[in-house]
Each structure stands twice: as structure tokens, then as C-alpha cells.
Image 1 (tube, one colour):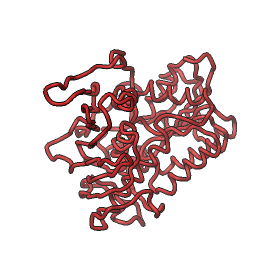
Image 2: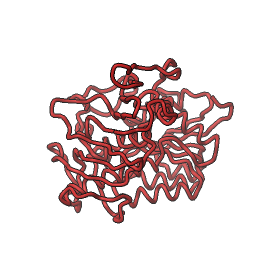
Image 3: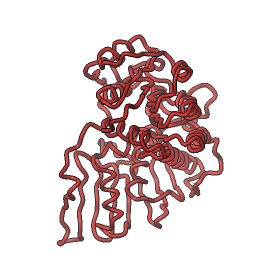
Length: 372
């Protein structure tokens, strides 16, 4: 942990996801934290985690000071303005959650402004949702199973090609080290009860998807149709000339060799303990602020690429499943996520995705449905 003190703003830190950021940063001795959240429960959350300062808006904060780090845990409709405001104010490291934007051109603008201002722009948590994912990706690049020959996302993208699917798409890009060059896509109907905002086109709603992705390494990533019988635990699977790897919890499965000579292997990095996900998520923001070079793991660029892949899958599906080349020429394409992601639980209603109510300072509300 750095000896330097970092000024950190957690925007939306009294939300269901934001409270994890608030707790993690508040526990760090090298961080001085301000909570930015207009909800009635904000001061209760701040007091519980020992945070003294509470403000209602990001605008109020930026008028007063420029923090080193801003973690924006905000609904999608607010993410762009918040990220750009932070970059223009000179914040060293900023983050937002998934999906990063509705419209591809908006994601482009978020990435562009942060790059021009030298602000490290991180997005969400995909790199740490599978333990040792980055270490395994490096292990693959070192050639331990030879050149990659095949890739898949075994569980498909079962609920949201963008809202949740961006996680698997981002993880796939990391472990392969490849970009998607073309897409052939199919979609399934959205879940009952999902709605679109006024003025949106019916085809713009987030929904399950599957198909094929042509990668820059001249291999194909297969995304099978989601299975009706339930959740598939493996996020990404890869095969090389000399082995295979399954990326899932509680730790990845790495196999070297083929046939009778194949064997599981456990590199040294897997012998280490694995901390809370948010410890790594917040640590990467601190490291980025300390370096000051505008670079960060699990970046806005990564999630912009995932959004573009998701849009291409939907575009292919409504174009007779024809092959769609990337990058997309039409940057005005949109995917509207679930209303909870778009507007947040306080506006859309916590029951809209099965929560019993708003977050509590201790514990987690029960869900009326199992998470998928």
C-alpha cells in the first residue's frame, strides 16, 4: 500500500454496488474518502464506514476540489457526464460501471476525452470476477499450452448481451489477447417485463444473444445459445495446440498436454490467496493515480470494445445473421439495458430486479429470484 495519501470520491457509494467501493476505500490507510450520494441513507452509510464528508452531487465536489480518484457507481444514463466531468477537471483516475453507455458514440467520447486529458479510465470488475484471470492470461501468452486454436463462451450470453454479457466479452479479449474482427449473431427475446424508454426502437432492447466471433488470431470464438437448464459456470474456455483452460471460480482449470499425456497444472501464482474482488478493483485505481500515465487495467476502452461486439451481434441478427465487420461504421447504434441499470434502483425500483428494498449498511437484501 502506498505511503502517499489519495483523495477519493465514491459517487453513488450508498447503492447496492457502490457500498462495496465505499467500504474498500474507507478501509485503506492511504485514502481520504468523500461520499457523493443524494440518497437519504447516504449519511448512515458514511457513518457506518467512518467517512466524515458527504456531498449530494459530483458538480458540488468538483467546484470545491479535484480528487485524485473518482469511482462513479452510477446508472448508465449518468455515467458519461460524470466520467467526462472528472477527466476535464483533471482527476487522475476515474471509473464507471457496466454497461458503460447506451450508444456506441457516447462510449467513444468517454474514451476519447479521458485519453486526451491523460485520465486513467477504468470500467467495472471483469478482470477480477474470475480469480487470477490476469495471471492466467499472461501464462497463456507465455506459450504454456501453445498457440490458441479455439475459444468459446460456453454459457452464451443468457440474459443481456450488453448489460452482463460485456463481462464475458471483456474476459475473452483479455485471455486471448485478440480483437474481434467480424461477428455473426442471433438473439432471443428479452425477459418478460423488460421495457424500453420512450422513443427507443424495439430492436434496441438488451436481450440474450449467441453466435460466432472472428478473432484477429485467425480463430473463432463460439458463443452457443444459452442453455435452458441453468447457469454454466465457465465464463471462457480456450484450447491450444498443447492444452486447454477453463476460466471460472473458485479458480481456473489449466490443462497441459493432449490425450493420455494431459495433466492439470497449478502455476505458482495460484498458490497465493485471493482477496475480496473490490480490493483489487480499488487497488488498480490507486495504482493508476500513483503512476499518472493514464493507463489502467480493465479499462473504458475494453468495455467500449465489448459494447461494440454486443451491438454487432444484434445488428447481424436483424440482418439475416450476415457477417458484420468491425469496427462498426454506424456509431449511433444503441442497446438499452434493463431499467435498473439505466436509471438505478432508487428510480426504477429495487424490486425491478428482485431486491426486497434498498441496500442496508450491513448484509445484503434477499433476492426474490436466484441470480444468474
